[in-house]
Image (tube, rainbow, N blue to C red):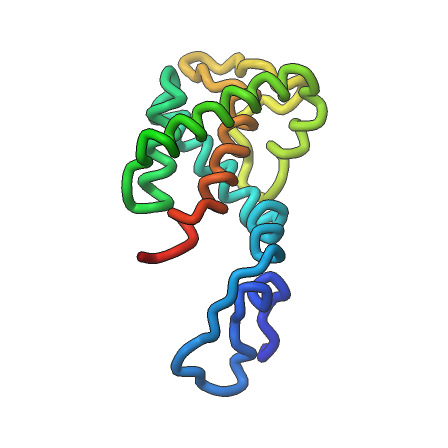
Length: 155
């Protein structure tokens, strides 16, 4: 009970054996690896991507803006927006070239994915135009936002 999960130790969590008035704050590359690879963070990025795409199915830029506002509490500046849209478009091309590598990304975690995972094809459900390819690419974009300075640091 007194030992926090290993991922929380990476983020300087206390051991809970004694009260701590102020935590030590550090930034290490291990923290970025946890945010990029821990199943909880990957699942959170996927669910965030699915919700953003459900709200803005025809405009990836608006979906990215919505995710950024939710994570950073401010809209992205033009440079950030351009970089994130470029990342999304690049990921779409990578996923189209190797769809089997990204099918696993959509199955991480306990929350069921909205995406039809086999082949990352478009869903056959009427009224649902979000494809597995879009969700996988937007998940990678959400992970980038989660790791950005705007989402990590409180200023």
